Image (cartoon, rainbow, N blue to C red):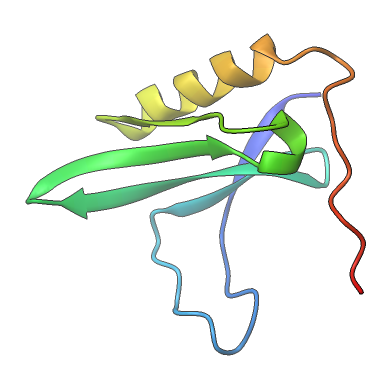
Length: 92
């Protein structure tokens, strides 16, 4: 199934508002990561990251443009073994 980007919204009333350049990455209806624009030290870059429970650990990086961030995310996604999906801990 192709990955798709959707604009992120607030998850909780106390969350700060998400900007227009914040995206959730979905595989079907399942959240698998995010991509967002950062402005650090007057340098614009894009952060991309697979969800910890999907990737089983740290899988993230930075890219100079949204398109290169999307490509890097896709490359990391494609490198995961088919059975790598972990389940998040159950709420208490």
